[in-house]
Length: 166
Image (cartoon, rainbow, N blue to C red):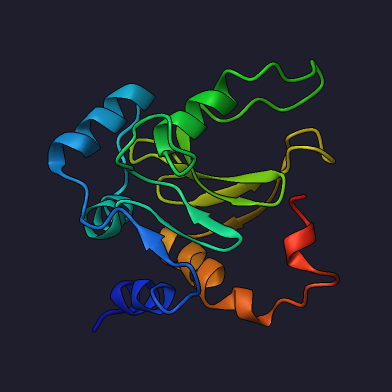
């Protein structure tokens, strides 16, 4: 089993794991790329064809959903929402050559499309405290997945996580 498959198999062990229940089709992937004006990198296409999207308590890996583009987990809906948001003038605008693949708190993780100079990288752009600026990145989607799926167990929560969203 390769690293990519192992990481996604680990995700299935998470409490409240959910995915599309099938892989995304070539037509669904092409429609998402067209809606966003990007070409997805091969590793992201592989993820979509395997899982569509993935979520469990506190983590969402955005992708193709059954209710495109209106579902919370939708790469299209979430990316378009953020691209069209009314940001303050001093904030960094979201990259147009990227799309949202995940979220950390109030910040979104953007993956750069295949035609970008940063193709395949995933960057975390902070939404509330750093005026939308980038402050963390992963060299590729596998590194990003590994941290989101495997490294999250190493984090220490302070307080009751069920109270965070009340």
